[in-house]
Image (cartoon, rainbow, N blue to C red; front, side, top):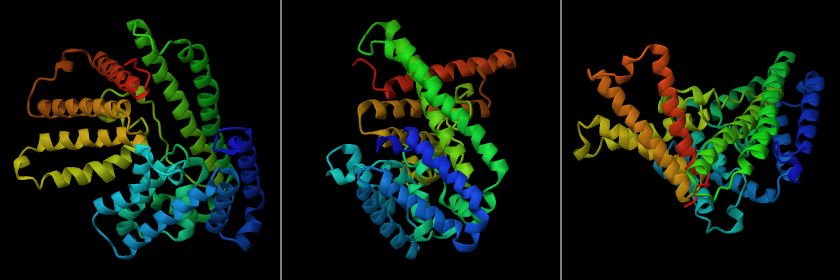
Length: 379
């Protein structure tokens, strides 16, 4: 069964390529008898039932979140905090590790975030049918580790039907898929075997800790970016244009740009559905009136704390998120300082050198934060 989990073994690739071949060979015939949306729904449900361990738990979660989704959308509920809490309840139980086994469901974090997004955006983009909702939440390529798609964008691809099944999209998807395979199964494995696994993570020697931090950062990029690229590439071949999740993040000169390049879809989700509402909400407090920078930095730090907790309620995830929040708040304060006429200390260097100094600071800051994220810090 493990061999058929998304991108976990040869079995998954065999059934995926067989489905892609079936779609493209028989699309003209299928188009006369079954809608693309219905076909994707049937394939998704069949895959979950036969290939995902304890699939009944996933279907129970689907039923729960759909009922909540339908109630809030049907009644045009405009507040976001309450539905977020209701939807996130199973995930919270999962994170604090006290729940019954029914809450130990693979992909629960991504399912939760997608459902919240679908509720919030239903006001502007309309609701999803049960078929669309199911396919969106349980789409196999993005089930375990994203990227986090948007419901209205996914719905558009379903409505386009078979027209996205073109030879050019096969080639486009194949190119991205191959890069993902190289990243995850070649580069990440080589980094792990010949670098990361050779380091004693319990060593308190400074050299070992630095080596561990950098090796994990390199490994994480190839592993996660590789998975994301495979998900995007295979989805395009099926006719679903999942958004890209990585764009040279270690070339970013500042925290804001870093999160526009690293796990892009999570950063975008947090910005739209947590940071912006929180920033607006904090303006309601009288003691924060007129303190725009403080409000921004409180919202920024809270957003990154949520990011840390989303990965797990352990100190190293939370502290890693806190560090990224501190980085972003410092950068935000510095940008405002320069805008108000403060001296830009990076301007004393030539432009090319200046941006590379910024990149050096950013990548080392990211390495430090991700070292804690790894849980390998010997504390």
